[in-house]
Length: 239
Image (cartoon, rainbow, N blue to C red; front, side, top):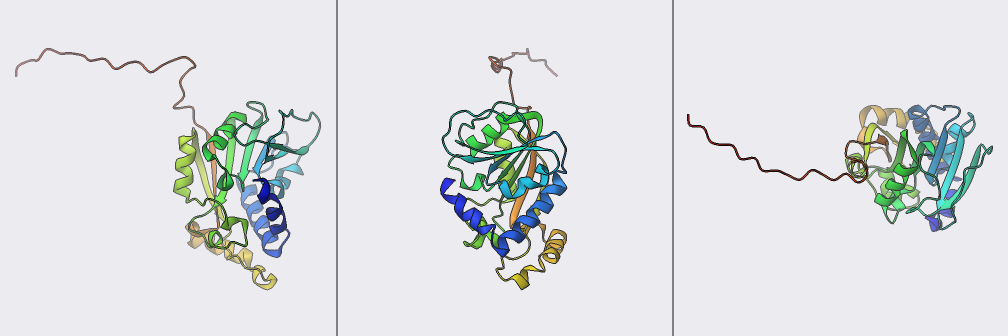
């Protein structure tokens, strides 16, 4: 992920990037209205989107992946940026009310491990919000944008991956129905594209967004094994 950071930062400074960030923020805010007192972790490259909650009294952490020693929550800081390894986040268990994963899963070397770490640091009643490039969207075919790199997903594929990592999907959304234009004049109609796409073609948005909660249905208490199967022999009864 480290080699992608500068490219992501540069993209979100372009006209297309500014529009993409605005459209994604609008959708994320609808899903997660600000709640003062919450702790929000942004995994991947979440800085352009954490401002939704940072200005509302929410503690926010943006985490980029790299090797660093274990990190402790700053007591009074409203927000911070830290660095950690995706297979072992330098964060305590059950520390966050919400985890936003954007520009992370598609570039991860071990997506399953990253999701397990998100599960670990999320509170039991917390929520995970994942944003990935849509395999069926136009943005996945535009290499000049970050959505044209890494592993793309359909909504069904992403839901299956989350389910295997002990999450249950509760809400689905999409964004970036505007084609990946570069010209400022064409981008002015982005809002109209977004409304039309949400209404008529929800499967072709450039980004798939899924909200998930922890799934405890398949967990067993520590040390408890599955009961062995038993064979029961029943004496036959004639008709």
